[in-house]
Length: 243
Image 1 (spheres, rainbow, N blue to C red):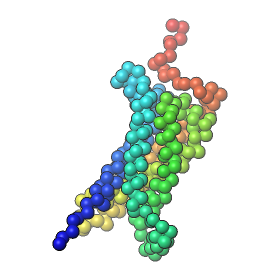
Image 2: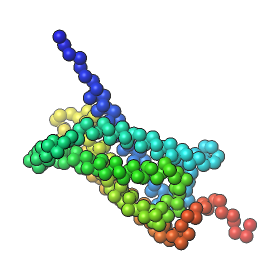
Image 3: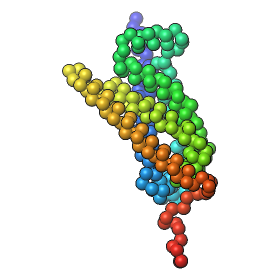
């Protein structure tokens, strides 16, 4: 009598990879949009209104931002639930894994462990950020975001989130490439080495981009602190002088 093949774990693995890929793409795209502040306040304001649907609907709908935050949170929850299958489930399992990692000193095993730690941290850091976006979708903009970061001291959340999320995303992208890309066995070591170099290059790039953006928001928030709460008016909406 032949047993039935259980496809559940394979399907869960595919779903974990797909949800992880979606989150990586979202994180990288989100970082580019956030860094629009480096191009000026008007550029960041335009990006904000774009996500609120103003170019399409004629007026902003901040609830669209809340909807995106809710969808991303659901994807994170699904991804985390599926990833928990592979985490050590007890102190004994963790102790065995830790001893194994120390003994073999394998870089990819260490990277997986970093993903576990960063994933655990993201459960709290990313959830706090998404909750704020979900509840206050209209509190985003050149001044609103800068006031929150500086006067509201949210830089204490965003600084560690910046490092943790890009470590997690970069390592995750590297591991996805190794897992699903058709890599010939003969060139596996060379490809792995190049992928790892690309991984660190991407991580450093996004951390530097994010740090520059965060520093810019902090400077704007510091300068705007006496008028915290005042909303930004773009240059194209200002009345011409003496009109």
